[in-house]
Figure (cartoon, rainbow, N blue to C red):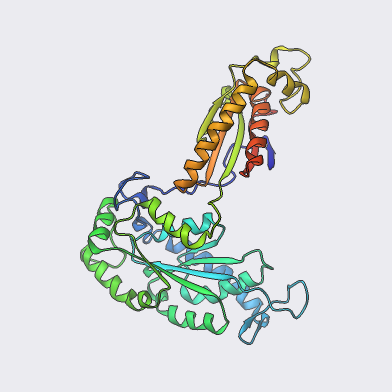
Length: 371
């Protein structure tokens, strides 16, 4: 368990929920089809992603051409000279705009994959080469490839042939949906289809289907999201890539002081102000809740231990539901008046409980030392 003192209060990792663009109608768990839509990401992310990808990839490609040996990706930075580098596993996510590509990518990111969105296909072999030189730090790469790349998309077949020549283990995931479902999703977010030009949404969809027909035929897995909501799509991705392991839940337990305001990123808030305040005990006032005497004082108060036990039991129920619904990040804010004594002691014990139950936990004391 990691512990952070005097943090700014922001989450260690942002939640992986579906935003309004993916949700279609602005809700997270709507039953139906509007829940899965990456329509709004059609063109806005392309410029920055392509620039970053080209800059990083070209720099490394120019300086490391000598690291390639025949058909195998090799590196001079391996632990023992002459050994071939471990080639990362690769998943290429593609499919129809609005069919849920961004949701599928977020799911793989939550499962620990290194995800690159809107990478020009010509740079995929370079991305794999960079992963191979990471000495095992990047073992699984997922790349989102779609028609946002426009003219770059034509290089995909050549890149796939290059990957096969290097013996890269790759899979192509194709997200599909009916025309009716795609039209509803685009209309719900009021964005044009990236290929419709001056025509209608259905014209853009028809053009995209024609462009992707060959790739769909070569896909290793085709997922039809016409009748799926966000959680059902995530469940399908988990079934394919999570193996037998239950989706991991990561928790941030954060102590805070109410007089400094509620943490804006809190999912759950615990109020410890029902316990006597050690601030009014002169010999305890200078110390924090991390001090053993202060902690003992807090947990010797009536109801303190019972509260910890009951809340830990409640979190077990909540954690099970979060995993079932595909939520993998939770921030639990534990507050007292100043964020120095009661909340610090309670959050430390609560974080220990979660870590004991196998939840990856980060402990943050936002306001400790702020007075």
